[in-house]
Image (tube, rainbow, N blue to C red):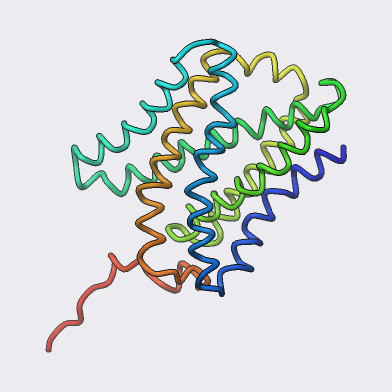
Length: 224
């Protein structure tokens, strides 16, 4: 139960850390750099064990497909570019939620005793999960949706815990693993494409999104 409580609290620490460091200009760049490292690490955490277990490159191919499809859609139509990023973000977050669901099930009493190393690893990696969600959603869609995104991870963990160990057997099939791999690729695309765009055009994220429209939305004044 202690690991479950810590796993539920950990995603909240990411946004709190973000807010605490944001008034410091150097810390903002440090956080940005950390996210670019954390997302591939999170993808590896989700994907590599399955690839090793299946002794197949299919999972790695799925990551590549998830990474390249949004890029291809954006190149095909400029009008779809912004919508594609939002869709890729939503798909990528669904992978994080699925992973949180499985982790919650692993903490269920009927799943057996929780290995200490596993429990600590889950808790620690959930801090960057919360930070990444906040970092991605907050600049584009505001505090409310970013909070809902972090809250969804917590809710998925609780749902997995309630559903119990039965979920682990049903949700560890090859199809689920390939889906997680593909959506992980989408998340990498969003971070390194739209995330870099959002965070390189002014670090004013301590202000509310609704109070400060994006630079692309500004219109020149009429008249002289």
